[in-house]
Amino acid sequence: MKQVKKAIIPAAGLGTRFLPATKTIPKEMLTLVDAPIIFYVVEEAIDAGIEDIILVQGRGKTAIEDFFDISYELEDKLAKDGKMGLLDRLVRIRNMANIISVRQKQPLGLGHAVQCAQKVVGDEAFAVLLGDEIMVRSNFKIPNTTGILVRHFERNQASTVAVMQVEKSEVSKYGIADLEPLIAELYKVKGFVEKPSPTDSPSFWALPGRYVFSSKIFSEIGQVATGRGGEIQLTDAMDSLAKKEIMYACTFPHERFDAGDKLGYLKANVELGLCNKELGADFKDFILKTAEKLSSTKK
Image (cartoon, rainbow, N blue to C red):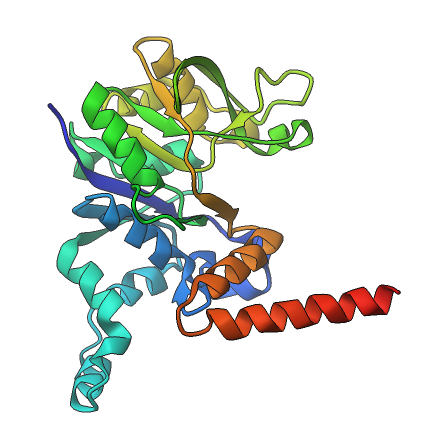
């Protein structure tokens, strides 16, 4: 019975949607309230029981690796000032997981980014969490999104991916799954299509960037032809694997935000700001007052 203890976080994108901000700063290092986007993704992986986290980075993204490294001078000063609580979350990550950095030398697509970590993963099962997709959990009595996938994989010993429903007009932005309902939140996958047109889409079930795979996905990535945009598409490899062995998809009850998109990034900041124990109440008052002001202006 294979367990899921490794995760790949692709973070090699160029961040063109956030230029000029991302000219020198990786988009994954943009701040959501008080921590970088990728910090929340890594926390999700650790809370799901992941022990080894492989960051797949491109050229010029050493800031991500540096962030998770030890800063002796800063931590020594905080300790002497009695303020180590400010770094508790980061220290917790360092103590609970191994952060491993892998270089993607060319931006050849998500499938290629995952394949770059193959030597580290080996023949083990692993999760994939996109580095700019944020899942906000309001109910801590249930597992986070990656935790739900891990639970299904370890129970069924089959690759399992997260899905969510989107509007017909939105399907061309996502990989789309063709599904057969099974029980409750669980579906059997019949196939995948990368960013179909609304008229050609097999469903409105989209892939929001959370996956758990058996190591067999690597051989499929190695065999698929270059796909949309001249890149090696992970969706194409998933489609091939789903036609050879059983693969599952499941829904999740958490709020999802595309923090790699400007509007999604702003929404994620609002959601996380409202959830923040120190700032939430004051931030809510500000939002309500702003909404009231906007309402009166329209009148």
